[in-house]
Length: 368
Image (cartoon, rainbow, N blue to C red):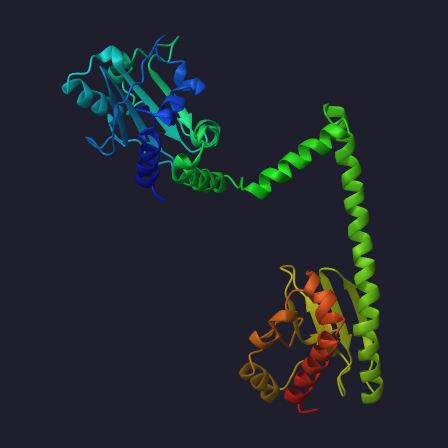
């Protein structure tokens, strides 16, 4: 939704009538920040609610008073003399200056009204001084609108309010999602709050103590997970590869496994200074090809072999005469740092078979 859609929904909620009253508008005026700028005994009655009157996002016109709501939920830039022009519009329609109110509505309160919108003239009309905000206040969806919506839901009683209650629930949920505060996340926060209280985690010292303990536990869990992955790899990757190498008369030169890293080196017939290698890049992706033992004493490929590798989608650099990333048919093996990789692709031996296929692909291009 854009800002105009939010303004229309707010209008529809506020103008809802029950028993000749606007109950949600009345509860809106009870929002603490708004109540503080209203005079004692302020009478809400049943005003008129209008969107886009003289470009005002939401204008509330009551008996002898007007409330301007400027909606900046998505941080739209203030326009020159924006609030001043809105106030002039209301004055031009006969509202007394001391009965004009302006609400500046933002997403979370981080955006503040600019001096070229709330001009010196606008401040004078609204009674804003260095000591007082007068009849102007900044409110936001997170701290003011969302709690108001949740309170409004509780005001809905009986079947007559079923439709408006459903609308309020949906809109409150939409606003909650703008902050990642869905029902599940709220339940999570409540659970964390209860857990902290149960363990008497209230002071800075207790928070620090438990953070240190959690960090130690996290480090231990990471190490144990890597050990578990290594154990699985030795059974479902290393063992099949050793059997394959023995049948082919080649050597499994090196292997190293952890949750996020796989590295395998296998000898190639006729190659003394290079080997087949499958490794993991810094970004977590697996790649494979031919690698040199030593870049200073590298084994170069013939022009014909380099061309064949290039045509097959390989590239080259000093350490790697030929290497490539996985193609689309092998994407499920591309990043080892996942549960599915270790508990499915490795344990059903499909990754070991992929390594063998990759080795034979390199071997075939080399014409060995």
